[in-house]
Amino acid sequence: MAIRSPDGHPIPPDVSRLDRQIRSLAAPALGALVAEPLFILVDSAVVGQLGTPELAGLALASTVLTTVVGLCVFLAYATTASVARTIGAGDRRRALRLGIDGLWLALGLGALLGAALWLSAPGVVAALGAPPDVAPHAVAYLRWSAPGLPGMLTVLAATGVLRGMLDTRTPLWVAAAGALVNAALSVVLVLGLGMGVAGSGSGTAVTQLAMAATLAAVVVRGARALELPLRPSASGVLTGLRTGAPLLVRTTSLRLAILLAAWVATGLGTVTLAGHQVVMALWGLAAFALDALAIAAQAMVGQALGSGDVPAARAVLRRTLQWGVGAGVVLGVTLAASGWWVAQLFSDDPDVRRAVATTLLVIAATVPMAGWVFVLDGVLIGAGDGRYLAVVGLVTLAVYAPAALAVRAVADDGVSGLVWSWVAFAGVFMLARAVTTGLRARGTAWLVTGA
Image 1 (cartoon, rainbow, N blue to C red):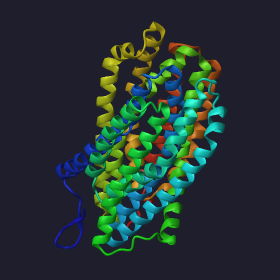
Image 2 (cartoon, rainbow, N blue to C red):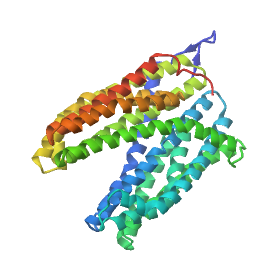
Image 3 (cartoon, rainbow, N blue to C red):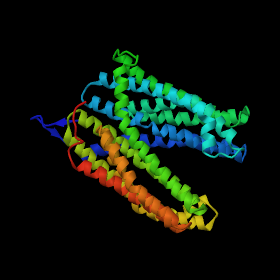
Image 4 (spheres, one colour):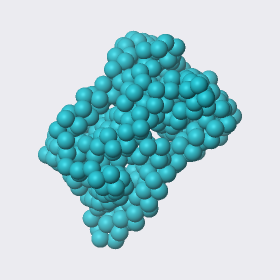
């Protein structure tokens, strides 16, 4: 990434070149992010043909599965940062060595979690309070999808390697193909062969394992071209664990905040909870667009710092922040303008519609700040600043919790309850994240150069 003048000093990249690189990385990353939720969407449409208990079982089980996989997203983030920095430092051999060890770590962790999920499925479903007619279907999905966990986590790690090498197109094509294969398998196994919810789970497992094999083959091919051994390195796997642990803490704090927001909505009443489901889904869609920019920032900052080019890292920071806030403004205007019509698509209840439409105005006002937060998160992950993110993740959760508890204690069901719950989450929580990441980015502690 570094461009140097005749006297050897680095020259920050021009804005147009930065924009081209951001677009080339973020657009495919967005496509890959959107492709993944299609797995559950298609499974829901197919399983929904079987009946309400089956669909409810899928909903419960898929929430458990996506939570487990979501907590392991550090496999992608940590690998992206380490590979990008090492590539930036000019050591492609070590970058691919890190990638191979990351794949082994993901495979081993996936096998352990898959076995644990298979064994604990009945207990997990019972602990979540599944009704008697729903529980067998939820257990069936968890047990038939559990063998796919090694594949799911390997997909994360391999995607991280490729992102670190500034390749977001390969994961896009694999994710798109996977979505198509999963759809076909779901129809054949669930409806054609009559396997029910178990067919949906097994189709997901087979698809994820195939995706993992495809992405891993790309990484392995690069390693073989440099005559690197493919066996795991104990030190490399342990390094991956040490690097990923802070990001696991950071991700856990985010998940707990989301769960706390759902708990608040549940306590306020049916209208608030129904509206929360709709608003959270729309927030998630906006998050995909912003997260794609964060992924671009991760890889670009990692390579810039790896090459020792601090001005380039600063330039990436400034430009991706402009993109993030700008995208947030566009998303905010879109949500504010379409809120009432969007609400009608999700509910026939006039109270839910009013609550959703009004709350989307809160989202519209805060999503530019979310763009700032997502990009800064990506920048600091790319810089390898996971320990700071872990600490402030817990701090921001501690700031948000009293606000959430206050809303649950005093707000009413309906418009006011949903609005105030999202003022707490999208306002207080995101503001705390914006302040903590913004203060870090203003300083120099994150600008650590070299591999």
